[in-house]
Image (tube, rainbow over all chains, first blue to last red; front, top):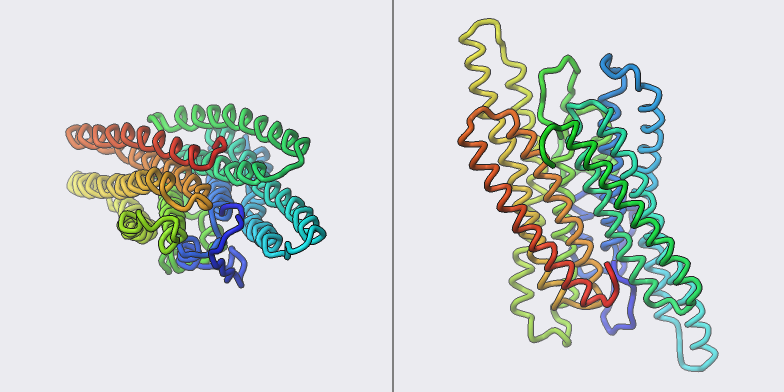
Length: 228
Length: 228
């Protein structure tokens, strides 16, 4: 999903059900058609949620297996995290639609007088901050999934390690995808201090993600015994 | 989805509907639980399909827009491709389940006598080839999506370029994810000539993907005017 821009295009919002309730066919069709939501932000959230689900799958095949009794407690704690992230990311797909619609509504505000223009600008700037912060939260949740891929890829049921590897790739890509939407919204925010603060937060998360990705890739490759 | 291994775990196959007909909640729950399918292969196919859908979305916001009349014919041709890829990738999630189940069925074959053992091994080796070739096809389709991200990110509706960027990240990750499943199946295939042939094909696609990713990232960043 791109940030709404002043445009003469007719944007029809037709989302009446939550993302989680849509079939994969309906979601795919909704992504593909000429409607702004769901878009890239929603796809990022859904992909991050799938990554979390795969971490849960590896853990669910580890718990109760005699070979892995020693790490049962750790695995249970990671499962609690991955399940929370899976649900939060799926819900964030809906939040992404909401903040996009709020930005669109601001662009539709009247701008005939200076008073109207000022009100419109203030509302828009406020809405853009929310539209940056929701994908930032999506990116942070994806980073948390990426962090789980290392211990789960290293210590989890080795028969399922390819799923931990897929989780790693998908969480990493979803993180970068969400950050595109952060960046494009920051571009239109005029509050320089806000932009500086969130740009620094973004850069810190990117650095952390690079380290987490490298660790997870190494852990999964070692367990797999084949190149990724 | 990992390659089925000889195991004492009880694997329950409960897929009664196609992936496309599942809700995102149902698919997520099915990924997360202690059942082998859907797994990483299916998640890769679904993610690749989402990437294709986002390419279609950018094109659908470009077609009919006066600013982009000059590239209408090219865009229409790319839309035909992206829509085909979107549907093929969604269908490949089902094929991935089928080939996994075929491998599992081989592991369940009797192995009491030498004759039974030989029959089981032959069937398994045959099934493993299909289980390698389906994710290879998923990877190839994702590569085709990745190729579309460059012209669409460069020439498509600039307001939607962040969606082309997300398509790029997701297609790339889905490609790598599918190739994990290729690699893990190749590991168990004893036909050395087959393994050599498919390893070479994999390496060629990886090299092509690196070039396509680099081109798409550059095209999207230029259009966006912000770092990705």
